[in-house]
Amino acid sequence: MRNINLIDLLTRDIIRLFCTHLELFRACQMKIMKQQSLTIAQRDSELKAVLYAENKLHPALFSAGAEYKVLQHLMDGFISFTFRPEDLQCSLFRYIVREILACAVIRPVVNLANPRFINERIENVVISASKNNKGANTEQVNSQSKCEVLGANIVKSGSTTFAVYPISVTDVNNVSWSIKRRFRHFEELHRRLKEYPEYNLHLPPKHFLSTGLDVDVIQERCKLLDIYLKRLMQFPTMSGCIEVWDFLSVDSQTYSFSNSISIIETLSVNSATTVREKSTDVDDGDEFPSEWVPPNLSIPILDLVDVVFQLQDGGWVRRKAFWVAKQVLQLGMSDAFDDWLIAKIQLLRRGSIVASGIKRLEQILWPDGIFITKHPKRQQPTPSPRVAHDSPNGQPSTGDEKILTREELQEQEAQRRSKLVYELMIDKAPVAVVSLFGRKQYDQCAKDVYYFIQSSVCLKQFSLDLLELLLLSAFPEMDFVFQQLHDEKQKFGVLEQ
Image 1 (cartoon, one colour):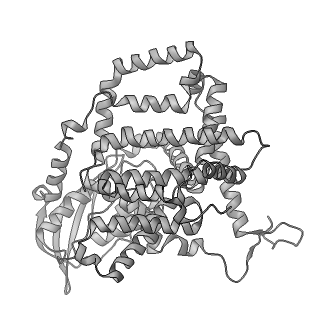
Image 2 (cartoon, rainbow, N blue to C red):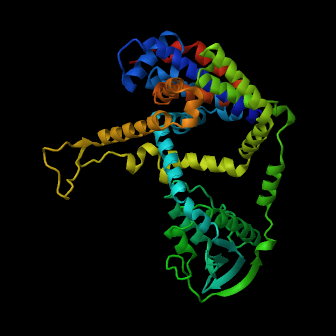
Image 3 (tube, rainbow, N blue to C red):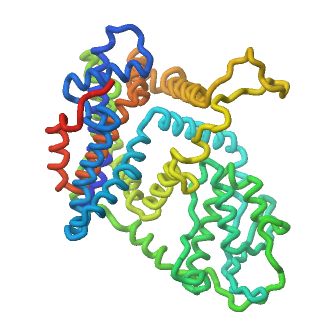
């Protein structure tokens, strides 16, 4: 295993991989364009047949069984480089690890690359952006509300000893008051705010090897809880919600505890210098190795624009005009863009960002600690296989009304999201972008990208090649594993329509 060059990976390798797959999709689409208008499902079937005939279809897409065999093959190679040889001599251990990685980790992650999930994420982004715009008028007011953790008190109530965090609150009218909250109160607030799509904050981690009354732990929490509240108040939609203001209220019944407490020790927040913050400072100042930072990072991104909008296929005047525009952009703002891009990639190396990404993936795949396909919200109702809608006046529906199954309702929802994405990309595209490339050119290229992300075959093939890219970036020794996969496709079966 070696260090991954994040700059090359994100600004060059992944972009090139996407461009390759988009061009492959366009080439295959040209071969099925002669047929009559196809549904997305029919288009996927034809794409898969064309790719298979040209020996360009990933063997994992041959069938469900082939996908399972491919993941087994990859995880066999992976664990041979990540576990000690003496551990792998136990066949039972090897098979259990392989099955867990293949079926419970890699397969669910790869399966996230499907049109329904992509469309749902896009819709959530649009809804969040809409809420932010609606809350723009209140954002300035909310930003004036301030919260500050003043320190911590170790207190005793009866036979129980715990830590209490005094908090100073100042509202928009400059009225101030103080409240006291336990760490479990912050956990309750955190649990309630998870209902908001834009909520992405995290509480300080629990220390399982300590009692929670260690001075170092409490001082660390003082600092991190103060940061948590300040970041929370920056959210325009949540800083004014009932959950937050109930937490900040003096008269809150949800977050109250006995007043008959005696203070044992008082800790000041100013003394809470934690190892975690020091390590964050080191991360922020840690620079990329010089060999990781090539000149002109913007070139691959500009090449992506070329591929997406097919600028190289236009007339001579169009090609020259865009070539001049690219040169002007590189000369005028490439350094500023490179610095901005490096700063953003630098954030990906921070432990908090990595942990946030892993936590988000866990919430998607294992909501409430239950695997996504086993979650109650995903289950079919057992008593009645069909879902009936009540009439507008509250009476049960009659036999003349159409009754939809759960699958049909989910399909309708998927079609609605698909139409929303189409409108965003084509019908309601930014006028400035459309005028830059021309309506006809923009529509044609935007539809290519739209049908690409609506194709489960294209997304699955892209995700599998992306998995290969990531594994080879971290474990170059796995090259022979992937080489064997592509050279011996026949052992994984044949295409099943």
